Length: 366
Image (cartoon, rainbow, N blue to C red):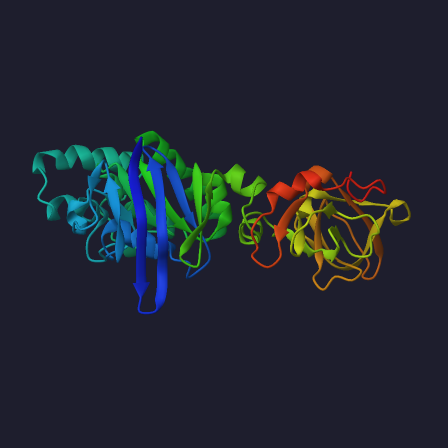
């Protein structure tokens, strides 16, 4: 059953369309990530759900009630801002209790709720401190605590970890996910970091220029991208996109004589993930490339190479540490089952042509 439901939400700033016909449902107790690049509309969408912005069109339903035109104070939801929005002159105890006091909630519940939240978030020894006396991670916990103490079932988070260093972000990701599960919160989490979305969320709404590009599980977005945008935004490094050469109804890669696919269509591009490509001896390969650079990442080495006739480089993820001399020749192959086809002009997936792709007898796709 949908806990939160948006229907055809639109929002424009003058001639700029910030939200373009946004519709989705969030189940009760689910973790939904709103993912996308800067300027795609994800924070505007979150603020519209919170009531901090007004939608130009469409409706928002929460717990089966229309909240589209309700003020923020009446929407019965919590929000955690990117800046934490803590009051610098109030200590941790007063910051946590501020919302309860502002809403005029029962004073007799304050002590029990404060005790519960402060222990849950390990803030019980910090209640007398001011925000300036806290680390970034501790300030983040106070912001989370202020949202949790309200006992709302829906929580909105707007890039809450962006001010933290990489190590602390990783530990806070686990803490937020554990907290969301323990409290059975319905959580909408805005981020531009696909690692955060993939590791934390039950489902991801990928936004692009104010519209939903794809909505699905992390596994679905990674293994079944709906477009070139989705394929390159999800996964690191981004998926390789190789334009195919069309001759009649056949589409060829580089100089190869065997077509990748037979399909009566406009120009197509082949998508390959770096981790799905294997290196083989060039003398045994139907497809070879020239190495132009390598990046050692610890667990893997990213080899950047050029195929003959291609304008864009190809990235291959090789397990472990490897050294490649610039200009050396490498052989490439990959599984035919791990190839993707996209329309070059629109960028949309051409999935119905993928069953027609050929597994090369010459072993570039096996």
